[in-house]
Length: 356
Image 1: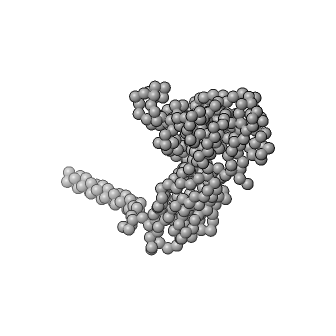
Image 2 (image 1 turned 90 degrees about the vertical axis):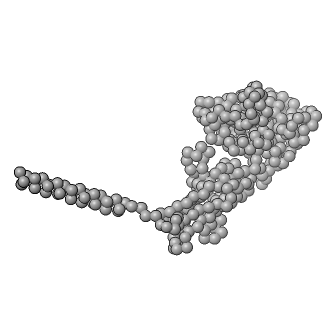
Image 3 (image 1 turned 180 degrees about the vertical axis):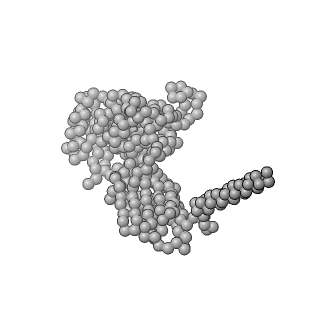
């Protein structure tokens, strides 16, 4: 019996020893995976001294970005600077520019239009030349230094004007893709929520819902009333939320900016059919103007004319910057006279001549 107890004690001691040995072995493996954090904090920081840059179409813009490395960090010829553009729905990023040492590359519509400012060794600022309407949005500056990286975000805003649009075949007839094309055809792009919100703050009131660039459908109300959400509601930008871009149909809010050219009116006593209007502009070395060009001339240049005229989409409109009797007495606005029969000789024409 005593021998049996001694055997059990020996086996128990052996199990305990093996358990401690396994635990120590696991601890050693754990130590091999431990991540040590330096006491001095991150070795790389990326900052911007300006959260928003405002420019206009056709101009240049510099998006500020600088990075700071610890003094003890030696030179890194493989340090990489990368700029991307965030899409309206934030679901993906579009490559804009990458630089690593002497190797530099620009992408897509930015090719040949972007470069680093290069104001010192720590300057990662991006210069964009000949701005387009599509350049509007948020950009991310990313600096990658070996195992460390840092980012900063800068918004590029454009001076311009938001306007509601629907085509000849009537309201609420465009899916998102139709809406995109409609804005481009009128020298514009689909407006963002921020652009519509700024227009609402400036007094825009429109009771018809339209697409925005993030795929949502919204409309701005400054004077609540029954057909537009209810008389007892508060002013604001009403939203239908995100809609199916293929199936659902609405109007659209477009955005346009400054242009390089001349917008002007032409007419004659007998007035013009639509085809005659097109030919009249062409004979003057111009083209019939687009809706976006009229809005830009009205909002950004104060263009004022009380004569209704043909535009490229077959609509008839006229811009009033100084309200007066018989010419938009209550407000400054682009007045809309509809889509008349193109054979009617009732109107002049608005032309646009591009700068050479």
